[in-house]
Length: 220
Image (cartoon, rainbow, N blue to C red; front, side, top):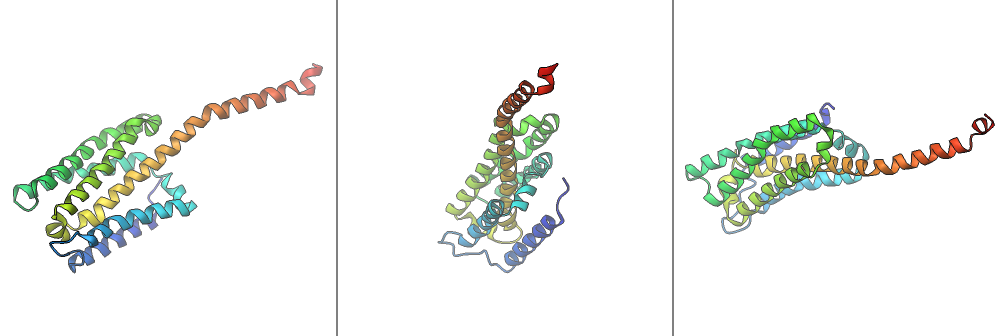
């Protein structure tokens, strides 16, 4: 399925708003306080996505129809997590945050092409535990990185300024939404697979009932 123009517009507006606010220093907070502004920037888009999915049938149908191969391929961009290690090497980011966020992102990014190929080879892979575990790990990595950054004070300095502010306020929630979309599809496919034996049994009994009660067959 092609990407909806509305989705492209929403992403563009979201990116522009974050870039404008980041350039204005709207996400910079006191050094001795939790980065509340960055927290809102990371959480609000995900909450908005979940609310739209729960309340808007057309949006939910769109989410469940997006090509999983495309969604998995998008995660390959997280190989750029190597940049966190580069920033650590230059003393811009602390080791704990850089290594945790960097290695986790790189693990998802390196395995994303393999996941996309597995989906292309078999539609059943979408309902497998490996696929769901991969997406859950991807979300966990992002949540852990944000938590370490917030508690360690990382987000109050370089991560609150352009261009790094785009990471917690745009890229992180975007990748979380991509993972959630994949998980929603996986759950839908799993439920469909689980119902197939029951539906087959019901159809079989129905055909048997009609065949048994067919007057023409009884006369013949």
